[in-house]
Amino acid sequence: MATHKLLLLPGDGIGPEVMAEVKRLLEWLNESGIARFETELGLVGGSAYDAHKVSITDGTMGRAKAADAVIFGAVGGPKWDGVPYEARPEAGLLRLRKELGLFGNLRPAVCYPALADASSLKREAVEGLDIMIVRELTGGVYFGEPKTITDLGNGQKRAVDTQVYDTYEIERIGRVAFDLARKRRNKVTSMEKRNVMKTGVLWHEVMTQLHAREYRDVVLEHQLADSGGMNLVKSPKQFDVIVTDNLFGDMLSDIAAMLTGSLGMLPSASLGEVDAKSKRRKALYEPVHGSAPDIAGKGLANPIAMIASFGMALRYSFDMGALADKLDAAIAAVLAKGLRTADIRSEGTTPVSTAQMGEAILGELKKLHA
Image (tube, rainbow, N blue to C red; front, side, top):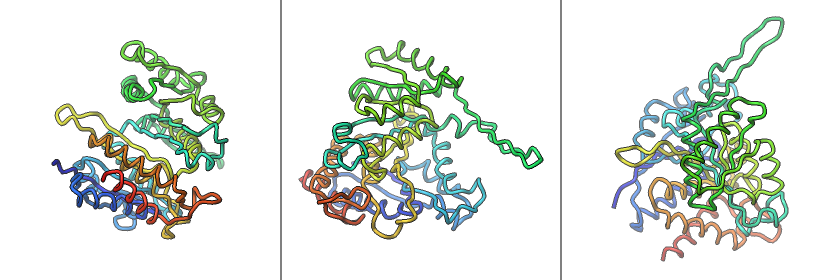
């Protein structure tokens, strides 16, 4: 049996609490002989700044590059609002994405039947929802240059962020989306703002050409990103796979998160290119939620997004799709029993802590694997 190397980066706020539930799963998988994982712990974000005055050290980056996958918690919080911009907690995550070449961000938005009433939309709008948002992660306005703030004098300043995309960047994220759609419901919706942005014009052109050249069997539609955001709220089940750029992907995936009832429910995967020799790709898995410093240390955090992110690692990094399916089923079973952390609690359900939710999910997984 192969040994898989994981780097665990719990980070800040609730990150260590939700990561503890992944550690619980890993211990059971190792002890039961189902899989073999070798883990290392590292610092990132504010915790790394406190220890080393940087958001991630060169040593931790080296371990990330050597790992088969990185499992990431959350970073940031008001404690570090005053640190230098280049050392801010979020810079550690951006460096990981950039240096590992993690250009493809997968953010599934799935509404479990037991949580349909937790959404802000009507049950009929979200029950059975299953969307995959594919976000380009290493280009666009977050990384484009120049990125400056210039003092113009007389109390005036000018800030510049640059939106840049090359053809190859659009093609490679497009292939991720089309390949995923072939394994789902065979539909891709590409979103951009070609009516006001030159990058949107190129995005639309490249996606159209890629579809015609390599993916004619997949249905492709185009929507402007603002209209797409409206339709996500109006009629979300019309979508299967949504592919979009870094900025719009950031916003649209958070909209999709709330359709499921809570940010605490959404996992994500960030993937790099497939290595020609090893056939593996660099990957980082993280919950979409933030560090939630207001509830850190209180046992209130929802660990489902963190656990489901590890499930995505099983699926996309380690070819353990059957085990990932069982983990998803275990989460659904716990929710069907009415167990709820504070963020998804409703009348008639049973409140549980972070650790109790993790323990219950592991219990259901053990039953399914028996």
